[in-house]
Length: 276
Image (cartoon, rainbow, N blue to C red; front, side, top):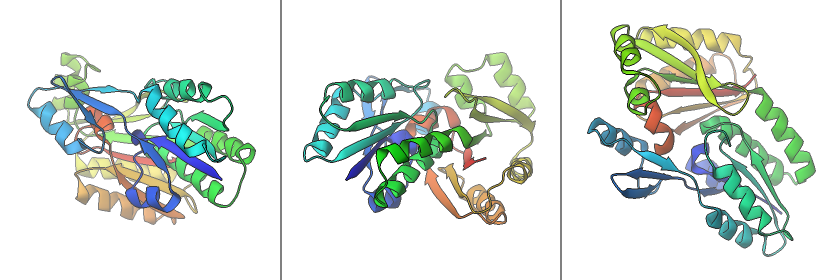
């Protein structure tokens, strides 16, 4: 049997985790000399509250020995593991999983770099879990995941520059100018595993919906699985979901941003993930 392992940045809904028996290892968020387990001891809302009070968090990877413990437990009786981590360009988590694999040379363990985050990673994990459930072998699953990864489209719309600024990603001048213009930024994957600025546009909620509508028109999502991620803007989420459903996707998976992603996205961000 093949067991699927991932990390908390995949942002999978609990019902998906339970349905496919996926093992999720959490990253850590460090604030004021305290370390919190992502999704267990801290969530996105709490992270934003800390940032609003002037306490900017740092995130840290999963240690290799955590992967070792999970890999050892899952493969001890002859089962195989496919582990899919967040992008190696954004965290040392992929390297930590490889280190753990190397310490268990006699076990059947495959470690894959999703080259993404959030449901861009999560949709790859779900595809692997579905294939494993239907009895597919690793040599069938891995090439399929490579194809899914190469076609994955990311669009994370961030309506405030505050968290990007506090995280040191833009200058104070850029932050002030962006706020004056009501600037929204769209982050996407650059194809190398990094998340970069893909587009900018001015305006608030109506402008965001117009941009998303145009974006969906450029994607062929009919009969495909689409992921939506946010954590506090329920109204916007429902409006975006309605726009997505007009394109007749196979299914829409809705989840919440992790505390790790919230460090940069802020409370009203929304992510749209689908294969091209």
